[in-house]
Length: 428
Ligand SMILES: Cc1ncc(COP(=O)(O)O)c(C=O)c1O
Image (cartoon, rainbow, N blue to C red; front, side, top):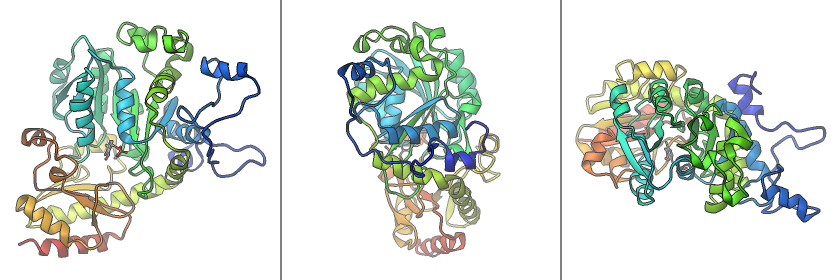
């Protein structure tokens, strides 16, 4: 569906039923699939034929929804994972192994930072974190001969920095590695990183894509433009025989468009089993059907709140790249001209205590470990999602202790502002 606009892809992408088939994506609530002969099934195990044999690896419902995401992001192949964490882990681990090195923007979601800096470090993969404001030369300097990927978030959670995707892509490609971009906050409605040079896109579908706080999930989309064979020695997992699949060479057999997702499915999903349930895939497809209608409303509410807070005497700083005074406004205008997202971060005068008083007084907006939902929600990152970060790391990630991350839902903007106003009145 390459020729349709994003709205049509949100509604109709991925699944095209034939005559008399269900209009809605069917939920294939089955762990397994039936075959007439062992030979038929053997071909699937050898990756010689397409088809399904066990839902730990693949399920038709998931694949229909993944196909919609591939169309939305302008990719060639996609897969769903059980969470956004799994998506980022798989995307990086698919190209980097023990002894390898990865460069990542330091301004990323705290859970991803922990995954990289602690858990994947224990697996022998070393990460170098670079400031979101690093110059191209500084980015270059972070690379080593064993660097296998560059990672960043289109709009970082919760610092709301905007990634200079084109520059990151140029640097990654100069060093012969793919750029992996987590596009969770922007969604493909507001930004499509592949169009700007990114190679792999990841999502926590738990956020705007689901949009209704119903299902944890993730996704990986391959842009299909990275030439693994041109960097044969760097990516032996894709360019040399996989003995666990009878010697298949993914990059040769599945080409640039299919190698990454096939390897990720055949090896990582097989061994780690972090598949999204078909039921959740169905729910996130419902979310996708209205994503293009919801995102502008989230952005409208975000901008209205940011403008209100900008001049409030109790607010030290508002972080929202759509505001002309924001340091990332120029990048927002370039990469997200329709609007960034509904998440506004701000620092209340009085630090952590004032933030807590404010949040406790809110009536519409709830304190939640969540973001990017139809219902407005907020939290204090320093004491929740990012509490494992040291003071120094918090500073690097642009997260002062008194920061409130406020996720504007789909309520009426005036009601949201009135709620914020009465809560700020409680801060003495
Ligand atoms: C940008 C980003 N990436 C990844 C994740 C992890 O996603 P999940 O909670 O679905 O595992 C989150 C979660 O908040 C996120 O905000």
